[in-house]
Image (cartoon, rainbow, N blue to C red; front, side):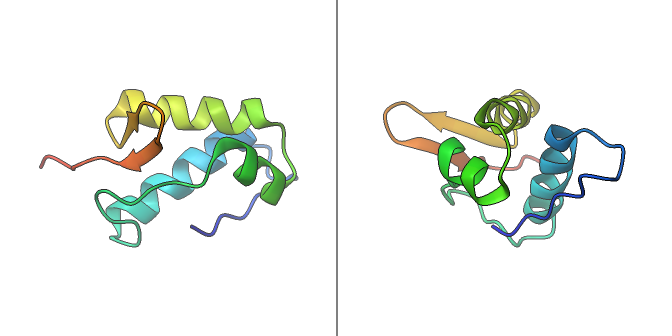
Length: 81
């Protein structure tokens, strides 16, 4: 999962993360059942607050694009179309 954050875009960082992950899932770059990078690891990679990544992941989960497996992590959910 490759994400790029534009700190000068005016768009909130969590929204940039959501949009890029959603695009990668819809384009098939991230497949059903694929595990996402942990909140801490992605936050460190992007040099942002872990709560920002946590918020993005939570909103994607509510949207149905991600599913949480307790004790294991977050995975790309089955897309129903």
